[in-house]
Length: 94
Image 1 (cartoon, helix red, strand yellow):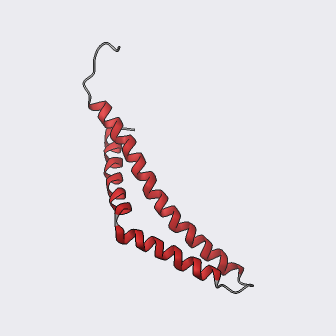
Image 2 (cartoon, rainbow, N blue to C red):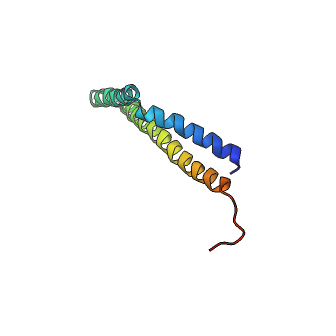
Image 3 (spheres, one colour):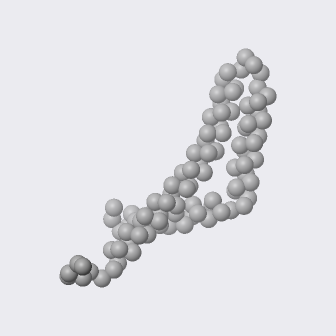
């Protein structure tokens, strides 16, 4: 990666971390998952497509949250790379 890409990853990570810590967003994810689960449990026995769609919706909620977590971790790695690049280089390594 280059420094610009690393810097973008750090900024993206900061935004993702703010979102993950936001209480309203946490509640929204939890409420969505709960609503989809209730709907999944109340689908008619012969409605396979309905069950599939609600199960997929629950997976999407979890995937979005996971994507934000991955962005935070990638940003930490990029921050470490930028930190290492900005250190003065020594001629000799011990």
